[in-house]
Length: 102
Ligand SMILES: [Zn+2]
Image (tube, rainbow, N blue to C red):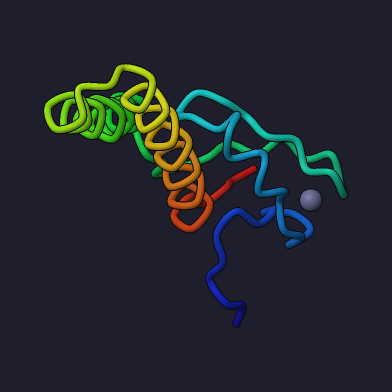
């Protein structure tokens, strides 16, 4: 009985690179680096949901900064940080929750 693992090749059971998550969405495919099997993600986070999280984590902090500090450069910097964090967060979530099937 094999342990249920995510982001692992269905054919050779090797781990797929974390960076592949950035290219992964419902209609995409990933090629295994070890056995060249074409893998399709199932049950992955939807693009709209990622977009929504990205929007929330950039616009809301920027709005708060603008309100309290009244500084556009700081607001821009905060939005950038929020954007980067949300992209990494979504990628990490995708990595932990996506199953790949050949
Ligand atoms: Zn493989």
